Structure formats: structure tokens, C-alpha cells
Amino acid sequence: MNILDRLILTICSLCLAVLSIAVILFPFQQLDILSRGNLNLVFRAMEGNYVYSVIGLIFLLASIRFIVISVRWNSQKNKVTYLVQRTDHGEINISSDTIIGLVQSVANKFTGVRNIKTKVDILEGQLYISLKGEVSPEINIPETTKELQSKVKDHIESCTGVNVNEIKVLITNVTAPIRNVK
Image 1 (cartoon, rainbow, N blue to C red):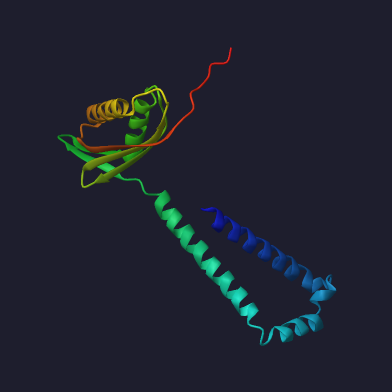
Image 2 (cartoon, rainbow, N blue to C red):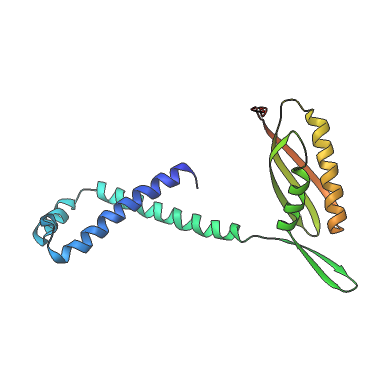
């Protein structure tokens, strides 16, 4: 969720909280401003003032946006794909999360490569892997990424028995070297 969505959600939540408190206190006549006479005056003052309609429309659109975001987020959250292999003894299903774990085990052993994020796409039995991370300033990026691709490919193919079609590596940043404090 981006910053604008969070801001809109906070404003909607505060407005809903104020409205809820008003509705809770109305039957107890704790707020004089919420008396029937005052509410009737407020509603009559709202007649013909289209600013309130615009505010209502904004809240309606914000609500619809949050419903769409929540539905889309839940559908993406549960998206785990499986690599299916058939053997003489039956079927083997390997989840994309398993392949991500195998890739991370190889990537974590590389010196100079940090914060690797892995994305695995399984399309019709074909395996596509995307790696996104940072490197230390002292390494040779082309050689290191080529070696990373080779090691990941060999490890995945030896563990799963499936050919890896493509491994993309995206280097997003050069990190500061880590100092040893004595």
C-alpha cells in the first residue's frame, strides 16, 4: 500500500471514528450539538450546498479503492505455483517457495552480493528466475553475476531435475562496504 492510500485510509478511519462516537452518544443526549433540533438545522443547511456531495463522493471512491486493493492483495498473497514432475512412482509437486529457498541458499553464499530478492515464474513447466539485489563496490559485477547465474542454475537443476530456462539478474544499488570495528 503506497503512502497516498495510507493517508486516505487514515482520514477515512478518523472520520468513521468521529461518526461512530456521535452515534454512540446520541441516544444518551450527551452532546447538545447532536440534539434533533440541531441536526435538523445542520441537514437543512446542507440542502443546496454541493460541497457535501463532493465530500461524500470522495469517501465513496476511497471506499471502493480500498475494497479493490484488499481483494487484489488477497489474490496475490495466495498465489503459489507448483512445478509438476511425473515419475514412474507418481507425481512430484515443487512449490515456487521451495525454488526461492534453493536460490536464496546459493545467493547467500556469494560474497559481495547482498539483499537478494527472488521471484520465480513457472509457466507451462518452464522455470524463469529473477534475482534483484545489491553489490559491494569492490566486486566485478559482470563476472560475479555470471557466476551467480551459473551456480543458481546448477543447484536448481540438480535439486529439482528441471531445466532452468532463464535467470535474470538486476543489480539495483552498490552498497557501502562493511567496516570491521575493533
